[in-house]
Length: 217
Length: 217
Image 1 (cartoon, rainbow over the protein chains, first blue to last red):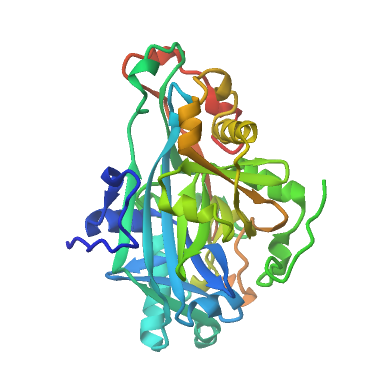
Image 2 (image 1 turned 30 degrees about the vertical axis):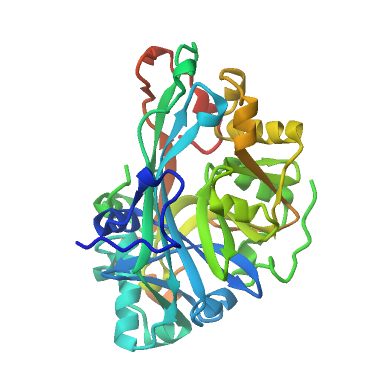
């Protein structure tokens, strides 16, 4: 797997040791997240919206209602930033300012374009479902032509991107290390609770669909 | 507690029934999140970065190193979007396109400004720590004057904002409800794992600091 070339816009400057341009690192974070935050500007005002997504090879796909003003703006070919953040823990240091979060994040910059080819659009919509719930596409009714037409799918190339990660214990000043307070890391994980069956569904038959997803406890 | 006036920029148009401008709803989401995603543009390119934050009354505070190019841009008075998303579950429907996520999110639009008053800056930095780990400020060394000077604190007014929420089971078409597949909601929660003490710290003494936080299991 390749390493992306850092651009002036994706070069990690603050804590450069935490940055990575390795596609294996970037892809693992993108593939584990359930939600991305997409930023784009309309008339000079940035908007940041949580969205479903999926990565397929060197592209990221987003989808939404064609009636959505913001998704329509997005697909018009404006500059976009897509960010995925996985929260791994809270870091308790011995001084206030050295407190931190452990996380893994990816920032992707580029221009989104609308996917108009119907077969490609279907594949992208299926990928977004498979990304959230692996194997689910085989079990449910696929999109009808009308649903396909009412949906806008946008693609963002995964070419200009960087990852940034923090892990491990606090980094305290030597002069603070004698402090009597507790210090360390409190790990955080996203955990799936007991499935809640919809009305008319046999609860006992709930498939362990989400267990196939990485990063869920 | 007040209700914000929706503006053309914060009016929830898609699934308007999921929107809220009620400060009680907005504040509860902002106060529960650990990470916000801040969007702002530099030379026409939006950037979306995960950051710590805190709400104090009608303002949101962010902080970071004064050496950070992006935080410096942010504090210059450019339009900003601050988004907090809490992921509550995966919704499994009987058709592909009706799959969804349950979530609570807040979008705040406005212009950030730098906090220069030293007392106000100290209070904001303390609020950001207290937001992540309630009660922690009393236990650790406060910022020194040098640390204060090296830190940039930005404030964003909480005036133009909206919340959007989805909860509950899938909303399937009547014609899909006879499908044999499992359907329902799989709740997700952020759960704190066993604390990992730093070198030289007594593990047994780990305070249940994060239990005071809402929304953590």
